[in-house]
Image (cartoon, rainbow, N blue to C red; front, side):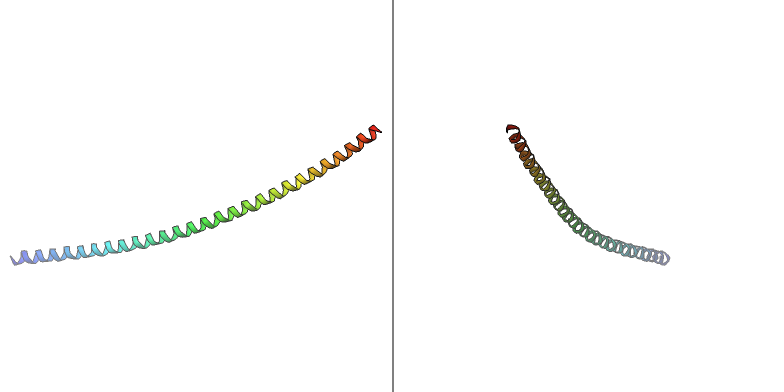
Length: 100
């Protein structure tokens, strides 16, 4: 009986050590997962911030380009209006000379 009790106690101690090792391993795994989760959360926040900054830069650049296009369009429009006025003046002069 003593041999059986000794063997049982030894087996129970062995199983308790294994169980303790499993608990330690599980806790370490949970800590690693929590750290990874925090790292991913921080990285996500950084990416969101960076994407907002890029988006704002793109909007500013689009506005700048649109302003340049509008200025160019107004410049061309003014040039065409001036040419039209010159043409109208030349045509009036030609008509006046023809009538005389």
